[in-house]
Length: 260
Image 1 (spheres, rainbow, N blue to C red):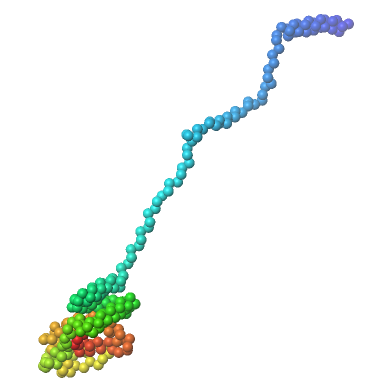
Image 2 (spheres, rainbow, N blue to C red):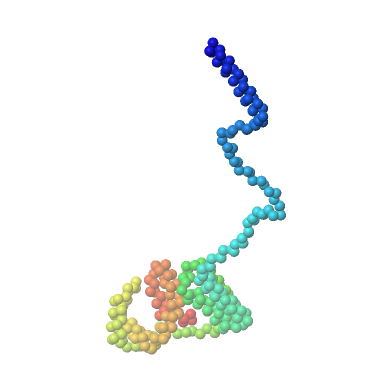
């Protein structure tokens, strides 16, 4: 009975509470909220917007500049002593031919002599270079042909006169033997190495005395002329297998005078 009475009391109270709640709910408008997000959205970088470009303002590609390189300097040519000698010989030879054609025979002979002296008197070995040999043969052939033509015409380059040889001058004078000169010569003979037997006799000592005093200038000039051909002559003597000292035989007989 008590439970029934309690239920009867609670039922009207519950109905009243529900009615009151329904009235308040009807007075308030309903609000809708977006569902809560568990994480904020990530910010994304905006892609750059391409701006329109003006073709006139657009940078042109850099073109390579053509560089002009100067030609490399040519290496300096080394001096050619053989060619230089041949040039000088040709000048004298051609000058001699011109003088010969003009009738200046003495001047032509001087030109030809200088041409030969340039070839034979230089420090170059004429047999060491074919160019020098060819030049010598050419000049010899040219001079001889013109000389022969002049002789056939009764002229010739110059009037040829015989010249005395050193031996001729020495034979004309008998010189006494100087004991001091002979003693000095004996010392030098013993210290000299030669392929020829060297003998110091009284006649030899007399010649030494003559060419050391009165005939000294004659011997000096002969040695100067012979020096132009000494290397060439001694080389040929060696090639022939004979002592190179034989050059002094020609030295004594002619002094290298062409007309001795």
